[in-house]
View 1 (cartoon, one colour):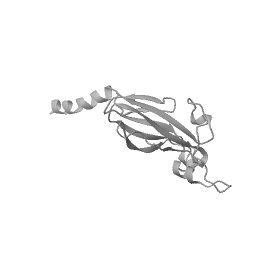
View 2: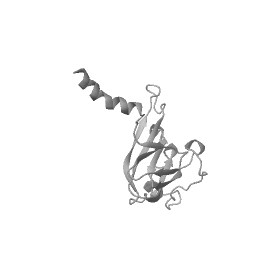
View 3: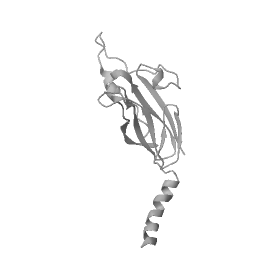
View 4: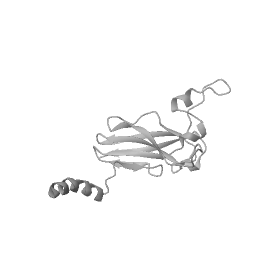
Length: 161
């Protein structure tokens, strides 16, 4: 009986020892990603939705022949109890590399509730009665969300081998 229990536990110990934690995560400081066909990865960005800070997958979407978009989500970290927005957090966008090639992932960073989605940003009327343009990238290619208080696009170049 002890031998059978040890054999069942062995694969779990082996996985823990290898540091298996899931897909590779890339932040705003790593905007060039190389992946192998079949590899899963995530773009992980800092966000605090409770304070109106959100990220969206913008148009045009990545080439679906090269990259499969698997969805998004958010993780929040604790803050002071009863204090809205006191904790930190991240939003993540999950992908699977499906075939060799190159594509671009375009994320829209929206601080301070300035936009709710790329579509809303494009359709919002301005005080003059015309549609506001979708925010343009005003920050350098190496900017981080801490560097800008304006909606900003972040472009990730994805190469699948």
